[in-house]
Length: 285
Image 1: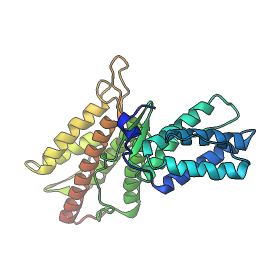
Image 2 (image 1 turned 120 degrees about the vertical axis):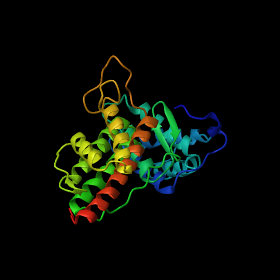
Image 3 (image 1 turned 120 degrees about the horizontal axis):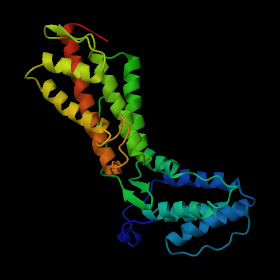
Image 4 (image 1 turned 135 degrees about the vertical axis):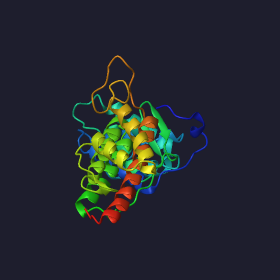
């Protein structure tokens, strides 16, 4: 795989032992499918040993092969990119064997993301993702019932998982759906002298803007509408109405993180406004 060459000689940091253990468990599952468990264990041992400049010797039996492999994995884990590279390349070398089912990149990235390993596989690259933190959001919104809060929290979680799996388009689709859903929470709320009656995102946004002239809410809805329109357009993000295949509308990891963080911040602001308007109108949803 491709990554910063300096990482090969000066480790940018190791992996948490729990990550090493989870990848070791994956090797065990892979080895259970082959005609020779020991052969698969020796295969992975050679890749991990080579990652830190060592030469793997053949173990005397399966038990020692398992132990020696784990020792090599722990040593390789002192340099996270080299460990990830060793596991990925060892799997790729086995993909020609139809008898062995192998974990895909999404599964590998999920382990790395769940334990904040700081790296992500974006074939053919390994990239550092420690600086890409999701914008924090409140765990609870007082103006929403438990079911609505569960939906919101699950959508936030799902979008982050999709980003971690290297699926930025799906991540943006998920959180854009959440933004549209959150807007429906305003239906029936009093906004000054009027009550929100519309049912759909754009209509509700327009009604709120008319009833909240001169407020920050009006300005945010203007920005939000522009983002929503761009992401919906076939020649923009191509998220909601299909993509124009004549244009390069691919959403990369950095684009996906930007859109997701923008929408997270907008959703958080909208829910704070929902609480404010709920208090003013005496409504509790």
